Length: 362
Ligand code: SF4
Ligand code: SF4
Image 1 (spheres, rainbow, N blue to C red):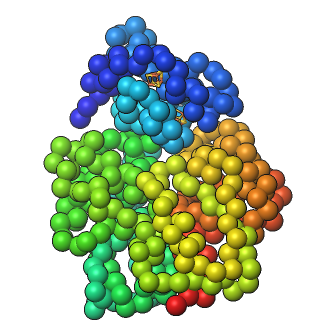
Image 2 (image 1 turned 90 degrees about the vertical axis):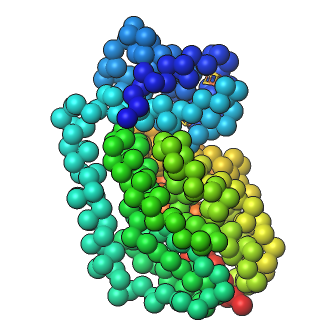
Image 3 (image 1 turned 60 degrees about the vertical axis):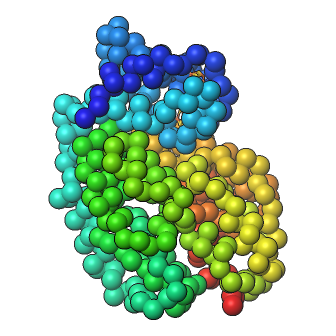
């Protein structure tokens, strides 16, 4: 298991250019030197050199991160902030009583069995899987869709008999474990999932941008994970875009789209719009800015989370859209938070729900 010390050279690559500060959504709200990755790296480099203690105060700044990866995309040194923060968090919490409690709650025995139980309870509400379609895909459903059966219904409605869905008994993608520095549990879930990606299915499909991005990150953490090919990952939006499906809104609607931070590409969205009638798309300002939820970030930093969600909601409200569409269950919560705080009438829906419930399709 790597420790923060293993990233000393990586941390040294930071030139202090400040590019990360110019894009970090948290730095824009609180221009504190320790908020963006530049400041975080200065502190963590000090820790690797033995000049600073990995203290409660530094841990506070480890938790002040949306894991939106905006800084990664702009960092000329290509330093991977999420990986470094997860290992630093692990070093800090592993021997703390609260850390041990979180790790226990995230254990396979507790976390995975609760999700499995929810999956079993909701099974009667899910449609039967097709076995005779032309295309076969592996579906990584993600924990939220194992609890709530609606997405399965929408997929079945849209693709009827066209697609065979293989759904192995996957563990969580591991993102909640990475966020809490539970590296042992993350590696356990990643290895278990990797073992189930062995079939020759054309695609691995997800309905959650965060699951997709975490699955794609496995090769950074596990040496033999290269067998997952990045190009084989798609979401249901990509499959709808390349299908023959055409949509017509049940009544004229104005919509806008929120791009989740972890979504690889949103090219599918405009392609779906081209195949749709009765829908007016108004692009919101900064449509790819974070929704402010970011899993446990919202619980640990409720004030910051609300400020970001409100800003997002203001951008949505300026469009006057009836619906804001997105492709991540966690973003749905962040968007709802912001819209509620601004008293907005705009409703949040997943892409699949919008296409199935608000449109007719052939
Ligand atoms: S963008 Fe990268 S190199 Fe520049 S200050 Fe931030 S972390 Fe350092
Ligand atoms: S991942 Fe996002 S929130 Fe975290 S430091 Fe980078 S830009 Fe800021």
